[in-house]
Length: 630
Ligand code: IPE
Ligand code: IPE
Ligand code: MG
Image 1 (cartoon, rainbow, N blue to C red):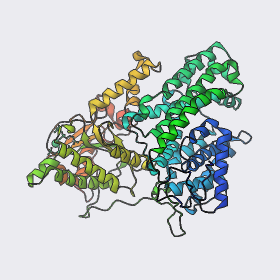
Image 2 (image 1 turned 135 degrees about the horizontal axis):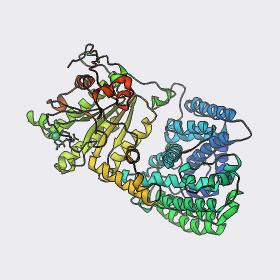
Image 3 (image 1 turned 90 degrees about the vertical axis):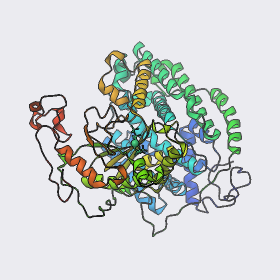
Image 4 (image 1 turned 180 degrees about the vertical axis):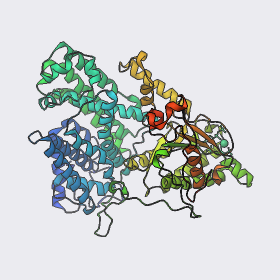
C-alpha cells in the first residue's frame, strides 16, 4: 500500500487503533499530500536502503520518517552543493533554517520538504529546536572540516546524527512503542551511530574526494603513512588499501551491537537489526571495491540486499501486528498560539527564577571569582523527617523543595555548573520502600519539570541498568530538550557512584586500546578525562555537604581531586539558596595552590590554577550585598 498519508485510514491498515480508525490523517490538503509524496520519492531515489528500512515500519509512521529523512538530506545537499562558493552555501543553509523556524508556528511552508517536516513536527509534537546544533553544523561544515583525532570526529558525527535519530525515536514513543534506551545501551547506541557515519563516509569517499573533503581523523590517516596524500590524489596505494581495511573493520565492529536491541519492542528492534545487516553488506561492498572505491560509490548486489530484506519484512509484519499504534491527530497551530510551543530555548527567552521568599539578594561576586562548578552532597533528609516523627520519604519530599530553592539561587548568583548527588549506587541498600519513594519523587519532579522555563540545562550522571526504564526515558527527554541551553548546567547524579564511574572509564579505555585507537603506554590524564561518562564535565571547585558528616561517600572522585570542601551541620531540607551563597562566599576566601607554592599561583603568573577557576592565592573576598556573609 502507498505510504503517502492516506486521506482516511483504511481497514487494510491493521495497526490503526479503534480510536484512530477513520480519522483523517492529512485532511484534504493536496499540497501536503504532494509534499509527503516528494519526501518519499527522494528517499527512494537517493537512498534505497533507507527507503527499504522505512518500509519495515507500519504505513502510518512512514510519512514522518520520510519527512525527517528528506529534510536532513535537503539541508545536507544545500551545504554540499559545490556549484556555489562556501559563503553562499552557508547563507543558503542559514536561510533554510531561519525559514523553518518562521514557518513552524504557522504549520505550513511554501517549500514542500519543509511543509512535510513542519506538519510532521505538529502532528507528532516533535521539538525541532533539538535539531538546532545539528543544523548549525551543516552550515559550519561549508567551511571544511579537519579532525585531529577520533574524539573530534566522533563529537562531530554524533552532534549531527543523534538529534535526528532522537526525533525518530520520539515518533515511535508517541505512537505507543517506546524505544527505551537505557544508559548501559546508550554507549553502544552512540557507537552504532558512529558506525553509520563511518560507513557513509567510506561509501561516499569518491564524491567527497572530488569535492576536496577527507572526512577522516588525522589520527587514523597517520597510522597509514602516505594514505592522506594518496587519497587526495585519488591514487589507490597499499597505504590506502590498508586504511580502508582498518576502517571497514572498525565500522563493522561498531554496527554489530546485539545488546542494543535486547528488551526493545520487536518492531524497532527488527528495523535496527536490519539496518545493521544492510550496513555490513555495504561495508562488504566497500571492501570488495578496491581501486573502484575512489571512482564511484560501491553498492551491494541487489540479491544480497534481498536476502537481508525478505526475512526482515516477514519478521517486521509479525512484530508490528502485536501492538496497536496510536497516530496522533494533527495539532494545527492556531493564529493565537505562541510560536514556540513547549520550549523557549530556541529563542533564548527564559523566565527569571522566583526571588527568595524573604527578599534576600545574592552576594555580588565578580564572575572571575565564582566557582565554575559546585557539587553538593544533599544529606540529612532522613534525620530531618525522623526529628519530626515523619516517615523518611517525607524528608526526601522536603529535600526536593530545597533543590528547587538552591537551583534558583544558583541561577541568581550566575553559577555555570551545579551537580547534585541525588541517589548513590550504595543507596540501593536502603529499604525498598524508601528507594521506591525516592524514585517516585524523582519521576514526579521530572514530569512537573519545575525548571522548564528557566535557563537550565539538565544532565544526568549515573547508571541506567537498575533504574526504572520510564525514569531513564524521562531523564533522556529532559536532557534532549534542554541541551541547547547555556545558563546553568544542572547535573543530577542518579544511581551514581564514583568507583562505578572510574571502573566504566577504565573499561572504555581498555576497549579503545584493544581496538587499536589508544596506545596503553601513552594514556594520559586527558585521555582518561575524555573517556569519563560525562567527558566534558569540568572539575569541581567547591564540594558542599550538608548534614554534618565529613566524608565524600563515593562522589565524583575524579572531578573533586582539587575541590575546596565545605561541610555544614544543617540538614538538607532546612537549607535554602542563602546557604549556597554562603558556601560560595566562603569559597572566595580560600587560597588554592594546586600543588604549587603560593607565589607561583598569583593571578599574574598565568598558571592554570590562577586562570579561570576563582580564587587563587590572595585573599580576595566577595562583597556580599544583602546576602549572608561568612
Ligand atoms: C540524603 O539524605 C538523601 C539521599 C541519600 C537520597 P539521607 O536520606 O541520607 O538523610 P540521612 O543522612 O539519613 O539523614
Ligand atoms: C550520600 O549520602 C548520597 C546522597 C546524598 C545521594 P548518604 O547518606 O547515602 O551517604 P553515607 O551513607 O552517609 O555515606
Ligand atoms: Mg545520609
